[in-house]
Length: 483
Image 1 (cartoon, helix red, strand yellow):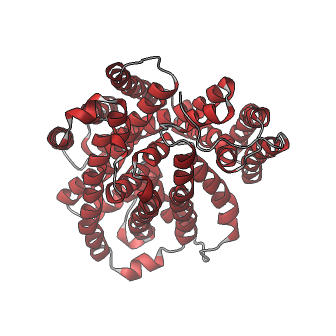
Image 2 (cartoon, rainbow, N blue to C red):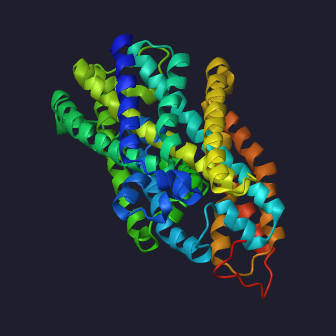
């Protein structure tokens, strides 16, 4: 499946990295770089257009680029529906959550910081930090592994070589200007995704035989006739919806943008971002529907994961220059989430862990945190490569379920006044200790009923105990004041 030379692949990476770095250098601001608020929140002055494009771009990561095509290929329109709708909802729900947390913690930086001051509890704060740091670790790891695998498959450059190069590219510009660099490069990367997609997809459409070929693939290779197929809704839709919505709520990237975007523009930023995101998996699904047709001869080489079916479709139907453009498009999506994960980690570290006091020390600590999570993510990616039995899918099981453990308690903490810290703490802890192992075991068994049941158990137990432990006459301070 090597369609480009190693030399071409190397040049591509250098040009891509240099372009992102140059953009950051041209638009950098010394004032923004030197203060905590400037480095981590772009001085809370992000407008809705850049905010919305950044929200969309940071959510366009490996699942949106690869899994969306795979699901369309395997489960047809029914799978695409249950992939796209929850993804879109996961972003748009912040149109409610973002203004709420800004009203409760106007000068805040992170969701765990809000939890600490909302409940005045160090143990609950520490419990919350685990899923929030783990989510960013996964964001870094998955982008390095998926992006590295893509370049390696198409150019022949070893995965071990490509992954650190991708990390260096993201660090090179994010270390300079923090969130501002991330948002600016997100804007450019989203333009590249849409621009290249507008060139590649019509060519694939024409080369593959047009709408008739796409329509013939609407059922996927499984031949699912109805877009509302109940089996797909049960086995794929429920778990996917819980995982995606919980993932967004447990992702500091979106809470960070909730504090960075101008307060009056939060609602339209997240709605705009959700719509922009939805366009990507819907458009890319064309590649999956095309691949269903036996007449096109689109087959994956032995040993290549089915998530690469979209890349294989482009490579089969279009010339090498189109494959090159498609790689740039995919790298843009992966890089946008990678740099967002780095800066989100620095926000968590400086706000919730670091003891640095001065502005200069806090910005320096933020940069160290980005390097640290980048190296740790790279190490986990190498583990997934060298120990196949501990692959990314195992991390995904743990990752999605841990996110679900704090999903409802987080929303309740924003809206319900009489919550008790003990109920929230024990509800999340029991979900961690009992629900996560149960969900992993269910996936090992590959039993759909157990998988769905364990996923619902995690949400139910964390919600139920949180509500059982409520207190009367315990109003939420509004707004919360920071020391």
